[in-house]
Amino acid sequence: MRIKTSPEVADCDMLTVVGVAPVRPFVNNLEVSELWLNHNDSFKTGDIVVLSNQGLHKKREAILKLSSLSMGELKGNSCRITLGLMDQLDIREGDVIRVEQVAKRVISKVIIQRLATLKDGSVSVCQDLFNWAMDQDSANVFRIMNEANQAVFLVDRTLFKADDNLNIGEIRLSRYQRELLGLCRPENRSIDVACQIIPLDQSSEEALPEGVWALPDVTRSKLSDFGIARKLSDFIIGRAALDLSIVRPYYFDESYDVVRMSGASLCLPGIEEADRIIVSYGDNYVRARALTFKDSESVNKNNSEEIPLLSSSRTDFLVGIPAHLRSQLGVPGVNYSVRLVRDTGFLFGKHFSRQILPLAAFTSAILATAAFFFELRLFLSGAGMRAFTALLIVWLLAFIVFMLFADLRSRVDKKRSGQ
Image 1: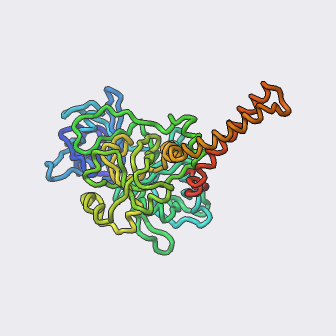
Image 2: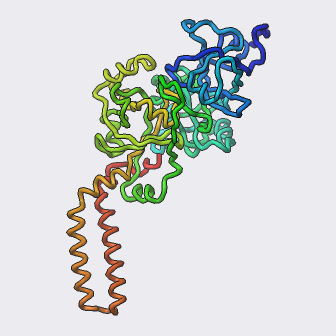
Image 3: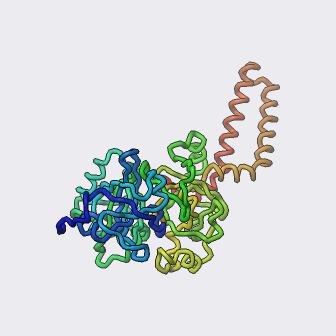
């Protein structure tokens, strides 16, 4: 129920910045007063909202939080935002910003996924949610967020499946997907939840690593920029991917381009420790070396502030990513899921270098055989024989390169390579 307007509360969607908000657990926090939340009952703590500097037409996403008493009480339409948001929106204390909700739908119940659809990683939703998602023409990726812990995992638009047996607000998730959201085990095949489904708009999603006081000049790499060379290496070696939820890595990892995951997770993409892997959030990606966690205790030690104690089995769903890589990805904080894909270009170079001598010997044998055919001039003229020899060499080299990577292709499930 909306309360009567207080004299302290002006326009419900306009806020005055009066201070700086802390960057934990997210780097894009918006703190508001309890009075403002009571007056605007359509907003809730933990909501993803859009802040805008109307004068400069700049927009950024933020996580709505109730003001911390340790930082001082907020009154009326006053707010605090992180320094990163201030710099991105080009505002200072005393400036006025607009806050508005993002397009979203509420999920009230999660039901276990049907066995027939577990393999393809799809998400079954009620017809109402499916129609709404298909109407979001500008969104190719959606976020499913657990309001209890702000855990988020991404779903490609193509993975939504309409299920006529589901009621409004119900979806089906696999155990793997429920673990990414931090949901407990369902009883009687379902669980009541408070989740949201939100389109991912990376044009308004810029993030800073914790403790950074000014916006760095970040150039983000885009998956859409991959060319023919990447597609060729994917074909020769085979693409493999998995989704994991972000936690903080070891303290000494913050200075390096590395990610950490469990040994079991490392095996799924068919890579070895210290191999390079591609980490993506939406269309943004980074490359990093993949290392392993020592144990669950080390993960708990570095994440005790935001994430409850983790069991060893829960560690298999996590990936530790340094703050500077999270910034390049545009990830607001921990508990967000990212996609990890083995870097087939790196694997091509790594394994090709091991085959240089066998390949050189094979090429020498082919050239010797070609010279023999050329001398005999069988069936063809001199010019024709040279063309035949060149085509034979090219075909045999392509065939041998393809066969060299048969072992790498056999390590992954081809049916899940597109996830």
